[in-house]
Image 1 (tube, rainbow, N blue to C red):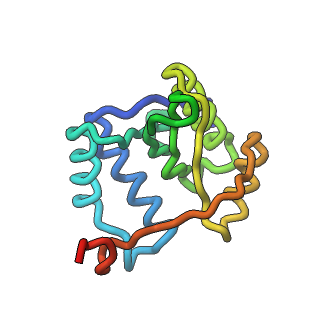
Image 2 (image 1 turned 90 degrees about the vertical axis):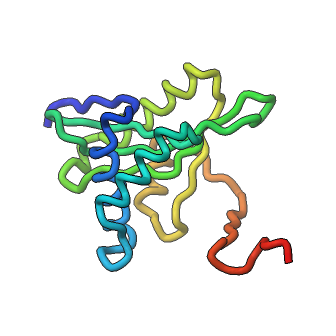
Length: 160
């Protein structure tokens, strides 16, 4: 497999980003829960147009998208330096084992450093030992943190 190319996605890449976002959903939640491609692409385009915190990096091999990183820059961070938070890192099954994930992570690190950011934070599911081993091989430090979530589809935080 030729060396993949990683770059920041633009609005013109929305279809490629959406296809990989849908692949993430299919991988983790299956076809019963994953959204169809059209609403997925609408969400990607909306996030890009509104310039919310979401950014996407794409890995291409032979002109085909094979990897995706969904990330955001968060501030203030330690000593106001900010951080890059990785929400999703995904590599298509046919490109796994080809160092695409490591290339995406190195690209993210270079991108963060260029913006003066001093760290990358991410989470994995507690059962995703493959991802945990991958990040630790790259030098990530396992943190002793507790992760919380507010499910806004319930009556939590409604002000009542």
